[in-house]
Image (cartoon, rainbow, N blue to C red; front, side, top):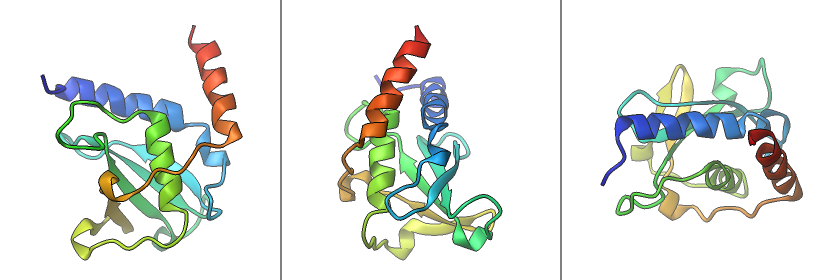
Length: 139
């Protein structure tokens, strides 16, 4: 059974909640997460705006659109840790994307990520700490 639009919207909201602490934590290349938002419906993705910091030019901000499914053949949706691992990997080393996967949104470059072509980065110590804190506050 495929997830309904309500299931997708709920997963997008959960991802926003889980990634809220990360705008203060730099990614491997020094950029930070500036915002997390859903794309227009009925898209099964989440968009993450990343840049040098608040107040920077839109040209220096990149919006990554990450599908909520790592594999289109499965019904399993990515969780916050999965999306964060992909986002970290996107900011580690050089990434090359086809022009067919790029466009713009609100004056910022938009890159549609293919999760099958990105090897997720490993977690760090702060991730474990935030997972424990989230677990304790969710009870």
